[in-house]
Length: 177
Image (cartoon, rainbow, N blue to C red; front, side):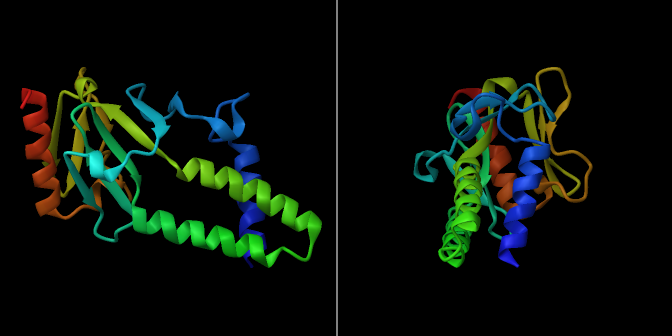
């Protein structure tokens, strides 16, 4: 079963690569084409260096605020769980050299992707607000950067208390505190 999941992940990566051409497994920073040119793919941030870090209610994602950046990334707990699952998938294929080779390539690529985050510079955001049960991140021209009206949007996954705390701290950062 895990082999099938890894094969699907490999096919998905081949059909719609996450990483830019020519920089396969070692991408450290590039603009994300879909959402906004203000959102970038960058190295994972250390939660201890953040002014504020809040987790989604299910604990899978972390939203960080630093003096310069707003960062979405997998939570430490979720990251460790996925890394454990990747190690287990690699061990499952130890007796089959061809499957083991594919699993190693895929899990290496997945590890590289997981070790990154989506980042938006504070200077590129006009405001962050809590509206209708979700965090809304507004760019300098009034367009939504994160926080669409999509029911599955991660910006809906934070508790109201944490989201409002994030908004207050963002306002302090914007004001230069």
